[in-house]
Every structure is written in C-alpha cells, then in structure tokens.
Amino acid sequence: MGRLDRPVRRTRATPVYTIGAAARLTGIPVWTLRWVEKNGLLSPDRSSGRQRLYSDAELDMLREVRGLMEQKVNLAGIRVILRLRRAPAPERGRRPPESPAAA
Image 1: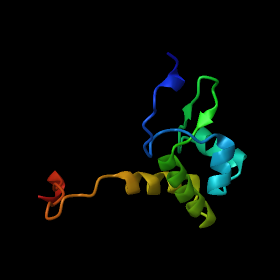
Image 2: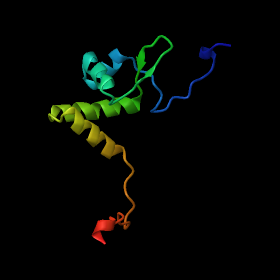
Image 3: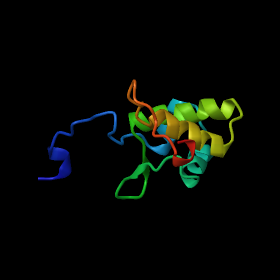
Image 4: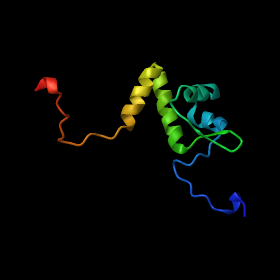
C-alpha cells in the first residue's frame, strides 16, 4: 500500500504548490521567491526530491511580502511588519507591566 492509496486531507497549511506555480499565483519571480527563503522570511517545505512546496497560507504571506516590497519597505521592515501581524492581539483592558524606574 503506497502513499497514493491513502486520501490526503488538504488544509491551508498543506504544501502543494511548486516554486513555478507559486511564482505564477503570486506574481513574484522565482528568483525573488528564492531570495525570500534565503533571507529567512519563509521556509517552504521540501518534497523527498528537495523541491520547494508552498501552501495556500504561505502564498498569502508571499502576497503580503510583495505588497510591502512594492511600497519600498526594506527587508528589516518587512520582518518587523510580518512579526507584528502574526503576533497575538493583546487582551483588552490589560495594561502593560510598569518598569521599576517608573515607580
């Protein structure tokens, strides 16, 4: 019984798109997708043959990166913005802890 005999449940996190398909779907050139990976903005899964595979969620993130690059945001800025967008929202009514110097 091979892996193709089992049905695969696909989610937004399931890596299915090759680098060429990801480039066409996002409008980002292949060399830029490699640059994004090299600079640590994204680490796509790899097939057993070492081919990059992107998920729907990763394609959405790449579209965000493309938009930021079009706005001339530099690499450090893109990292900060992506980190902030993925951080959990702070609880309402909760105040940040005060520093000892402020007391």
